[in-house]
Image (cartoon, rainbow, N blue to C red; front, side, top):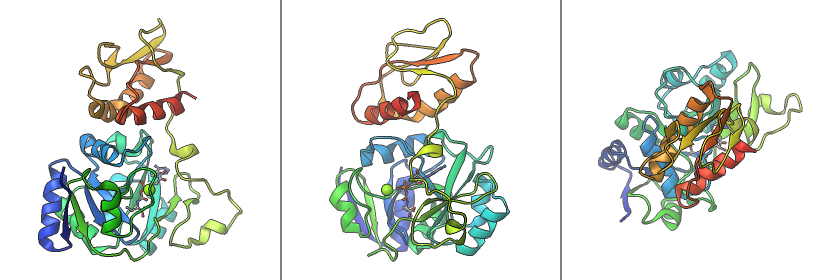
Length: 301
Ligand code: TXA
Ligand code: MG
């Protein structure tokens, strides 16, 4: 795949919107770092982000929206979250709030969680793109897994050239540091990631700072999960793959993108079934399969 680089302009944004609506991710500057953006309502498009980054696991992604009104369509803001949002948006603050019922956000975005990380970015390129696409955009930092976050289009190319179709070049980002993440899910405010903003509440009560991608940010089914299962025991709901049909299948045709797209939906389905346990067929440990297996191992642990 050839990676095109277009300097930020209204034509470039129109082209980026077209690519995103066709289901491919686009690298775009925000005021913090460059993000790799895809339509957050389309699981297939979000799976492409993981493919491009070679990300070894599914972590919940931040969803970007143009304003607080759009944010309130996908998340539930209590008074304190609302206050923070009003004060800091648009800007380098991500709020983790309960996911709103019927939000339309694909489950791969939240990695199956019932909460969602939302941000209203300040950079005009990302703002223009959000308005041009008219959908919430999931966007992790636009770098291959294991490399550092990109603050220039050249950094994006260094790790993702040939893996994504388009980069919008808006020059160096202003902040150069990923957004501050605050969770407002249970009436209190908790700092999940340090970032460019000093949030008053963060130092208030000596609360432990949780490393991103840990603890509550990982959905685990409430039932025991058995991996590499070739058949189901009597009390098991079997999630199939390929020739193993199971009660439902991640992908009868062994398509790893389809499997990634269906993973969290099927885990939730298995959890809701009357069976007391969950079993899951072997998934090849390559490409997106490696990310799926990593996620499953952690869910099973
Ligand atoms: O500045 C930024 O935030 C950049 C730009 C592109 O907006 N984005 C970014 O995304 O840093 P990413 O995917 O690299 O980081 C997302 C972080 C992860 O550490 C994840 O654990 C946390 O956000 N996160 C997202 N949703 C969450 C949730 N529901 N609960 C807890 N943590 C969440
Ligand atoms: Mg990152």
